Image (cartoon, rainbow over all chains, first blue to last red; front, side, top):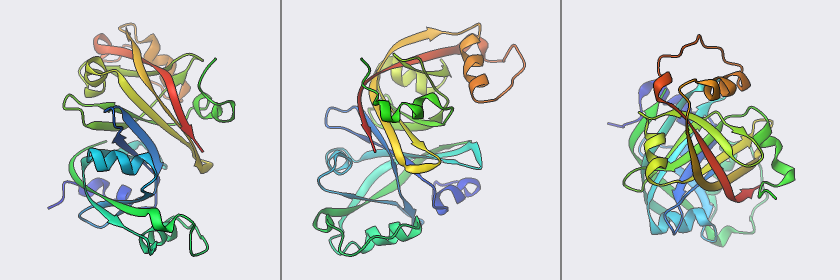
Amino acid sequence: MSVIPESHRDLLERALFGHFATLRPDGSPQVNPVWFRWDGERIWFTTETRRYKYRNVAKDARAALSVNDPDQPYRYLEVRGTVDRIVDDPSTDGFFELADRYGMTFERPIPDAPYRVLLGLRPERVSFQ
Amino acid sequence: MSVIPESHRDLLERALFGHFATLRPDGSPQVNPVWFRWDGERIWFTTETRRYKYRNVAKDARAALSVNDPDQPYRYLEVRGTVDRIVDDPSTDGFFELADRYGMTFERPIPDAPYRVLLGLRPERVSFQ
């Protein structure tokens, strides 16, 4: 059983931009646009170990994602949860799965391949409209 | 002198949806789509005292806003700062200023008028692309 409401699942299934909130080392919030992918259990993001987004969730795993519907902007889904998976992605297969989903092409190998990681957010609570 | 880069100021001037991150009472992040307005000094939001968004910033004023450009989604601005103004808005003039900006019409009085407040975020740091 997922906490994601059936009525708003399309917002995770469509290749929309999400806005991913994490906690900086001092506990203040950070929020940035991100690619994401939902596998029915976790929402996955791609980042690299040299970025704050990674350092933030490695220190405090609590995070949240906001996605609204560009066709009906008052329709939105917020997912709050825990980044309980951080997976090394030096092959960049995870990166390319996301890039493909968003219609972006890059030449392999990408320069930051050794630093790429995938973050898996497990949803715990939602709000939506 | 504002910390908002000239190159990305249009993202605050256009009536785009922002994604506003605040801290819940337990310190975990919350993020939701919001209307906003930039007056050159603060970014203003409308909410009401019965909502978490208000309770969050009343307890911990640290907050962040992410806005991306719908025409070029990789172009974005993140603003981090402090909500150093919370202004009662029972006249709802502040609410209607924002509603007008986003092309929405409501009949006066709106039912939650006694609870309406404006939150003013003072930018301290930015990230952008």
